[in-house]
Length: 58
Image (cartoon, rainbow, N blue to C red; front, side):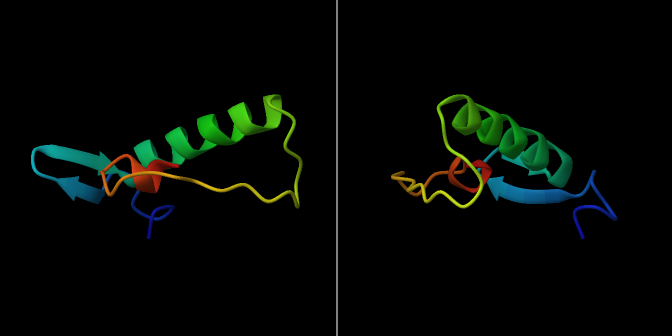
């Protein structure tokens, strides 16, 4: 759905809305930061986060 309709809303939390395109862009940014930190494809990484709207972007 995200590739077909990138402008559609993917996540809603109170007054915060993120489109699929925005989520994809943020995920790519996080991936680049992890790569810069030395993680490689196949490595395992954990995410510790409270239940907030930012979590799906990680």
